[in-house]
Length: 185
Image (cartoon, rainbow, N blue to C red; front, side):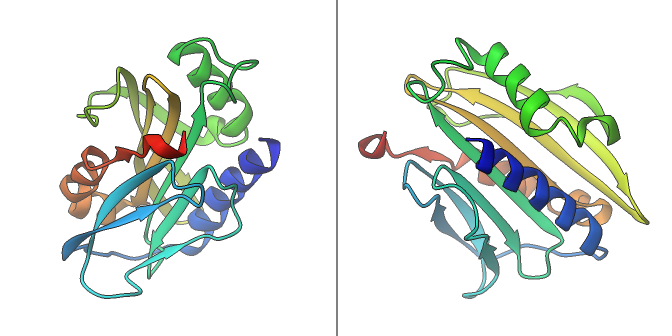
């Protein structure tokens, strides 16, 4: 768990230091999943190589960026049995994640409560939009916390300022496309 959290933070920092452009995502939806195959998400894809998965993450995490590294989506899935000692409900899972996973980034984030549509499997959710300045780059995104009957999810969708604005609708559609693969849980 600690390794996944560290990788989560490092990926955000690397993303924010290297990205400085505008991207437009388009194409037919292609399904991507984490290594443990506990969930999937459909992302607009024109051709192979449009999306690059970070292989150096826990099996419970999907960390995927567009080929130019302007857009990044990170999803962590924690089954209720894995979360036994850290979360009893969505609020405690969100507090734990904000403190332990995003603790180093939180001071740089301007957070605002937000509303987004979530997949049907989510029984409860909480969303905050954020902006963050790293170097000359302004990053925008959403932190979406969800729970289902079997798992908790932390979803971070972020992109460089103009890339986020240009792709917000497609990114939110992708979040709606998330599916729990119950056989893996």
